[in-house]
Image 1 (cartoon, rainbow, N blue to C red):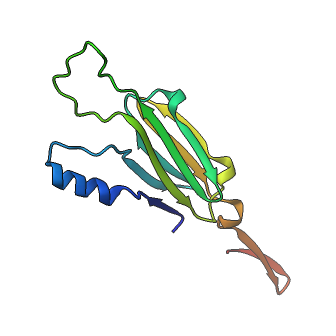
Image 2 (cartoon, rainbow, N blue to C red):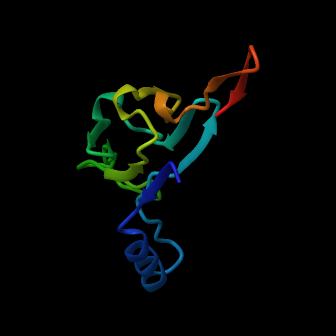
Image 3 (cartoon, one colour):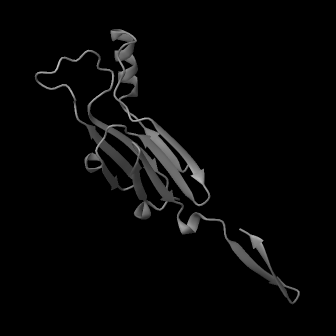
Length: 141
């Protein structure tokens, strides 16, 4: 697999939700990922997050995405309903060896962080010339 995700707190969130009832929604960063040609595209839902609070870090083949949503409950405000989580959110993705982690592109639009991770050149399909009998022809490798 070229792209794997890890969420070490998923089980803790599930247990907390069961213990405290259905009204508790664990803080999260929902994600979609798919391959599009020669790159992987990853979308993270981050509504209400300021672009300058998003932090992307790669160490070895682990991509860490962190973002912060400011708590709107302030002194003097009486919260009537508070379902949107606030605070710092984090997700980690293990990028396979066949991905080019040095050339990730990131864009944040309409509350969605989109990452494009290109497939490394050495992992892309390529053609190899085969010669024989006086003629050269190409085959897929």
